[in-house]
Structure formats: C-alpha cells, structure tokens
Amino acid sequence: MGLSVTPDRCFVNAPIRQLTDGLLPLFLKRHLQPEIGLEGDALYNLPRSEFAAIAQALEQEGLACTLHAPFFDLAPGALDPKIRAASREKLRLAFELIDLFHPQAIICHLGFEKNKHGYKLPEWSGHVQDTFQELLALAAAGGVTLALENTYEAEPSQHIRMMQALDSPYARICLDTGHLLAFAKCPWPDWRPAFPWIGHLHLHDNLGDTDLHLGMGRGRFDFAGLFAALGEQGVTPRLTLEPHSEDDLRASIETLARLEVVDLRFTDR
Image 1 (cartoon, rainbow, N blue to C red):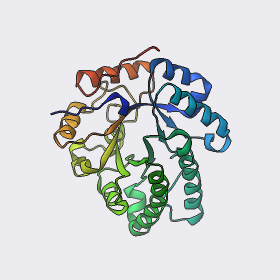
Image 2: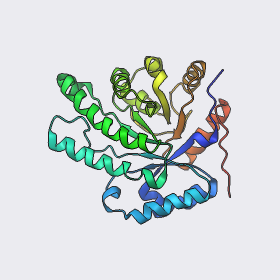
Image 3: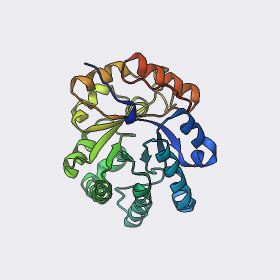
Image 4: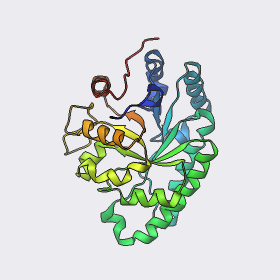
C-alpha cells in the first residue's frame, strides 16, 4: 500500500512577509493551509498583533498551519558560545508564537555539515542537543511536533542520533526531498534507517545540481518510490509543498493526485 495522507495534514510554504503583503487572502480563498516561514527580520520587527491577525484569519476559515523557524545565519550547535546564544534567542522567538498559531508542527534545521562539524563532532553534538532539548520542551508543552529538517546532511546518522537523544513523541525528522537530491546527492533509500522518525516531508524537485524548488515531477526525484516505501512501513507524515511559483504548486498538486497520495484541489471559497 502506498502513502496516503489526509488534506488536513497538508501545507504550502508561505513566507510571513508575503502573507502580510497580500498573500494571505489567496490562501484563505483557495483553502490552503500555510507553513509560515519566519525567516529574515520578521521575528524582531513584526508586531505581535500582525501575527495574531493572521492566526485569527486562519482559525476563522478552519485552516491549520505549521511554522518554519528561521535558519539563515543560525548555528544551533555553534562552538562559539555567543553565536550559539544568539541562535537560540532567535529560535526561541519562533517558538513564542506557538500560543498564537497552535501549529501542528514547527520545523527547524539540524544544520550538520560534515566538512565543518566533523572535526569537533562530540562538542557540536552536545551543544546542538542542548539547543533542541530546550526548544522541544517548548513545543511539547503546546502539543506541537518539533521536526528537524535535512539540508546538507548526506546521510541520516546525525538526525537519528538526535531523535534517540531527544527520545520524545514530539521530536521527528522532516525529510526534504529537494535538499536530499541537490545537496546530499544520495538516493532516498539511504535514508531508510530514519523512516521510523519521519513525521514531515518537504516536497519539491530539482535536477540534482541546485535547489530549484521546482514542482514535483519537474525534476529527477523519485517521489513514487519514496511514497511507496513510506507506505509499506506505515509512515504517515505531514506534507508541505515548497514550490516557488503558482505553476509549480499546481504541478505538485497534480503529482500528489496522480500518485494517489492526497487530492488537494484549489477550492475557491
């Protein structure tokens, strides 16, 4: 049996600044659930009232959301204590929005790079574990899943070690197909050992050379194979589509329908 997901567990990426600049009405009209990206300076400069207004609008339409915590320039396992403290401070700001949005999940990047952290692996591992232990406590208190996403990791060992260390039903892995293809340059079966902890998928495509965020089926990723394998193991993750254009969003929705994963039609309300 292949992967099957209900529409209430499906999301579409939506940077917070785009939501505040006019994208929100489109999500409401088409009844799409956003994964709200919190990158940039929004967590410092956007009034809490604007976050609250978005949360209220989603609730009124019966739409859930997920949150994507910031990751640019952050180093949750940094050896430098001041850089580590600054990273934790910004990440905590994202988790302080849990009480407003009541998201199904909040996505963070583990951020392991072998060429950088492999030389100081015990130290890095200890620091990054402390960071996510603290954030996991905030997520779990709100009944929210903390999902750690792959970026440059070539295989799943560091994610698995983190899941074992966190040892919580609220700690899961977010497998990003585009990052796996463009950066890890390994086939998805290499991530089979992580399947028991996969609770979220970021779905987009590319040609294996750079992170293009194409619609599913417009690149080289083997979605059919991945979905079949997840279904065989009884894994039922949440899904977030991460296109960078409306046309790519439509391509991803069509691919999910063709593979009989979920039927996500645009619904004008």
